[in-house]
Length: 175
Picture 1 (cartoon, rainbow, N blue to C red):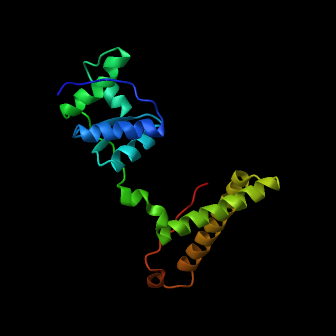
Picture 2: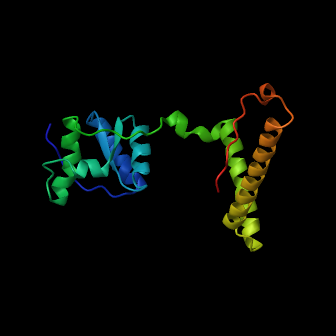
Picture 3: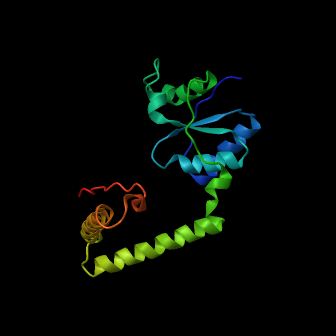
């Protein structure tokens, strides 16, 4: 079967029509170049129509030797590379994993993130810069770890027998 190249608008109904055409022609594999976030709609719709879709890094397809330099031929190039098996597909999580939002663990993570975002916004609305406060807290924590380390070191070297220290080696935490 000969190849055909025609532009397809990035509109929901146009992509569905294309997916129907590709499924009717029994296309074995569809290759999509990953450019920003524009490929998601293509992936979802084409997969929903039962097509085998592979996402490839656009840079790999563009830098393969022998690439044509015109836009129309450039659109056929990934198909030719796919036929020859020269493109390495990127990892796209399976549909079951992408729909993770329904599991309890994902719901808890989403809820925790929502609370942290609210807390950060509340602090920043109060003119408290979170990154500055975080750096100050980290410095105070490191000071406490240093003090605790020195205290344990004194205990192990002083009154406690060496066997009670459990092979403790003092560690200096640098800031």
